[in-house]
Length: 311
Image 1 (tube, rainbow, N blue to C red):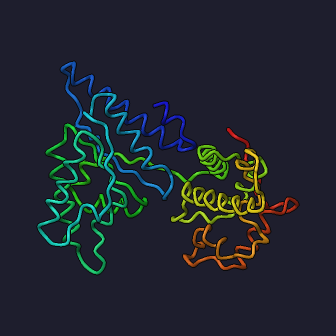
Image 2 (image 1 turned 30 degrees about the horizontal axis):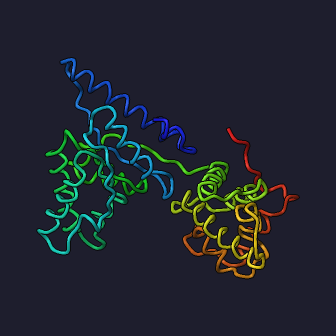
Image 3 (image 1 turned 135 degrees about the vertical axis):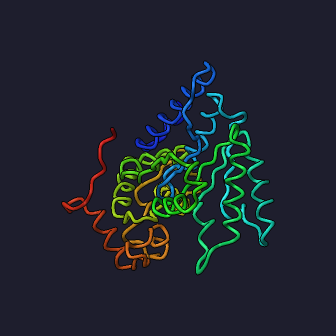
């Protein structure tokens, strides 16, 4: 639980996880006391954009379930459609069952679970076979298995509602909201420190300015975006030291604002690679990138969003 509390942001998801854990803990105590227990399901739906910590929380949740005695092992098995569906009808059931068997005692985490039933122009018989097998296997291992399905909110709601077997087993949804600009700045700082880099305060201010101009569409990468930003900064940091024969330890660790996206940078394609798609789904143009970068770097511009104070 301390590890869960230590995660940056995710206030709503943390609260929902804690409520779920306490509910199941009390249910277990009631069962041990010989009391009638409600028909609760331990399986969960995680909804949110990419990079919002769904897999990380699933891993912690598997340990929490084990700690309160609901799972025997507490490990996490993470899969997607490709690891559940085979190339021929009849083979998918065996493939899905093998994956479920590997997760018994822990948590089976299925990312973008709605891909199982998205069959393009017609029904997806292969994916449906996987879903039917999953429902059966969940019942067979109901005492020592937790299944978490994850993805974007709207497709996940349609996926669960389309199958009565799933709808009856996934009664609890945990919502992962996008990180704020300040939280993304803190995540960047944490990632950098884990990699033995020390961003200057000016560098972190620049990070907040960069994330502030990103369109928060359904595909915004959140922590993944920040990871890409850090990876690119590390590359620029190394290039900045190319003429320093014997850099100091401080120089080897220090990340400066110029190690991030530079408005004067000539390699516009490199800048575009760091940005999420524009709101209409089209890639941002070089002009848009330059304008956004110039606006975010102008301290006199009243529209520039300053990073918020840490809570």
